[in-house]
Image (cartoon, rainbow, N blue to C red; front, side, top):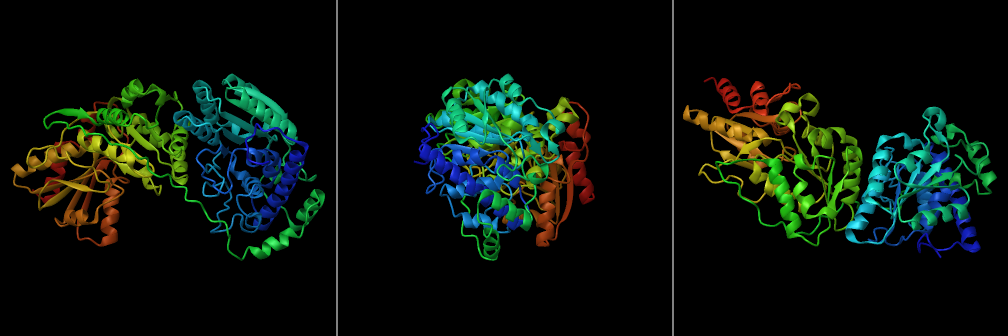
Length: 636
């Protein structure tokens, strides 16, 4: 009777069973928030029929929550987690007693906002406005893999004020994602009061204007809600159901009262509410007794496994030539697509394909090229969700100022969700050149330092870029590859061969030049200048080692000890001097007690427009400036 798909007809017996589930779901939600003395009971009650229908009827398998052919259900208003957990428990995903006793408790899987580690939860949310983008990512994943699952996104009406929702709506309509249905809990209440008073939004007009088909119904009438969802599913276009609901539905004193958006009930209020629902008020005391125990529901491993693929044959860029890293990234991407013709690959772009060099992929694989327009917040979440679809390789390429700085919070959520996005950001640092301050992304290392599982690669030349891209495609988890804009010299080894005509190993520090007086540690765009400076200083009798650090957030211990053996380390980077490679080296010295002095060269403020070479020279990051700093440091 349950979980056969939402298009199954509702019999009177099934309606009665669903109504009973919704009733008990309200009780579980109230018990959980009252035991925790915090949480969001009001919206949980207004969304209860939505959650009951979705989790009871959608194609899911409670015994195998990660079943690949399941329908995807995203709850965008993650604060209604009590209602979500209650509906999942009643659908058989886990025991309801754990929800009641351990909601919002340290160490419990049942956190205050829905988390992907909970069986049945598809995407961690809570930062409003991101859920629809995740749903777009899942729907794109179904299209790329030829799967038949449907994607449902439950949303609040308050979050419709956010711009990312509009970005997601427009992309879904442009891509014709008929497998995507949104259901809005239209209860007219948010923290500060009625939505119309906080910020008026004409929901039906907004969704229709962005190309969606709009349905409206009573969100507490199971038959009417089901009929609207079935009709939306069948129309072949992205559709939304505006479900008219009441916050606190089922409890008279909670109905349409904003206060109950975000607070649990007192003991007296709880007893009164359970009495009105006809449920056992003794559940509160029993749950409180169980809270001192251990939550039996275990977290699911929600880290996305890597995709199996052929990396292809690396390209070799000749010493003496100059080429841009972004061009090498684009060529490596094309090579990956050609080497894996049957692998679903999604490449997202935000109106910059020619600049970020994804146009070659677009020509080769137009069905996998997803043009998001100027919608970076949406693209970050869409690409992150897409990366969690089994067997799909997901890339997003943009300027650093947009892919890192503008989409910071979305990348944080990709970290929390254990996604496997491959982010290729170009035009990083002062190497963005004439575009000026607004486009100078100077924290592309520092920003990701604040996360926990992102890997960051800052390649030094096209050869290293090529190999880093091929490595990243097969790597576990989220990877950011940060590049500049300009053409760079191909870095040569001591013997004159291409230094990076070698396999890329994450965390490896590559010694480009041997030396004993000082160690130059460098990364990215200025690596070539650092090598040139060392070569010039060698001719003056100053022995300078050069270490190229492509992975500034993961320093190899043995290589660091070798670097410190000179007694003086100078870092040079086209990055904020406080938060990049120099910061990592400073941390290492402090934590290990290494006997080495440190000088950090980098960018100390936003600069003007100008040619990249001129800007780097002005801050002492060209070969002449770096050599001068070394001379001063060694007293020569």
